[in-house]
Amino acid sequence: MTVAMIPIRCLLIALMLAVGAAPVRAAEPTYPPGSRIGLSAPAGMVPSRNFFGYEDPDNNVAIILVALPPQAYADLDRSVTADALKRQGLTFETREAVPLSTGKAFLVIGRQEIEKAKVRKWILVVSSSALTALVTVQIPEAAKGLYPDAAIRATLATVAIRTTVPIEEQLGLIPFKVGELAGFRIGGVIPGRAVMLSDA
Image (cartoon, rainbow, N blue to C red; front, side):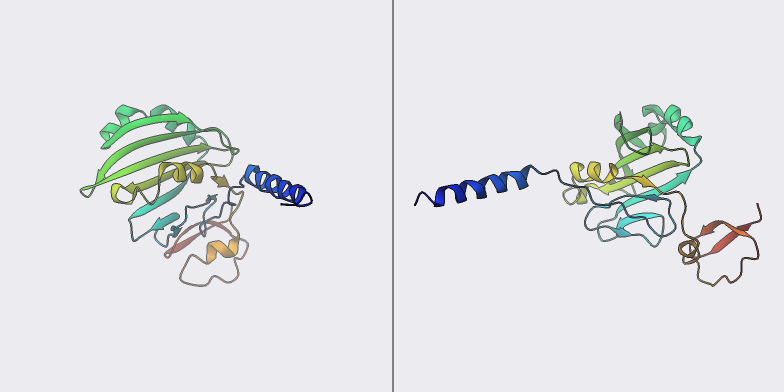
């Protein structure tokens, strides 16, 4: 080794250490068509055609996104207890506060038996001024190795809420075309079935 090679080698080592120490940016959240709630889904999951959320149909894994009125957060914060979950057939494990940029949130983890299959369940309730986001993750025991706890926590940390859903995106969820709205606004869409119009 020559003296001239030593600085280059040191420079390469320093560069590798700097790259290794750089913070890893979480993937940007995506929104299922028509949903105001989005997140960065784990690898292997795709937007569902059956509900707002993501799924891995081969392994019966699902992330279900439900938008509730803003005031629902206080009700859920008060009513989601170990006893209440037990009455719904869910074995309570933990409940913890989760810091999110959207607002206050809490996470409940438990287990449930669904159609004779043991399922690990994550329920995240997120508060925002626009709505309350209810995010439920269901992972059968057989798929736990594919979706470890660390991956689910990383996914839930990316939950985001958008202000509106573009009209074109909402209309793309129904099996027919809507032409002129004649001054009406879209009040809601039932994917694959109907569109509700409002003059308010």
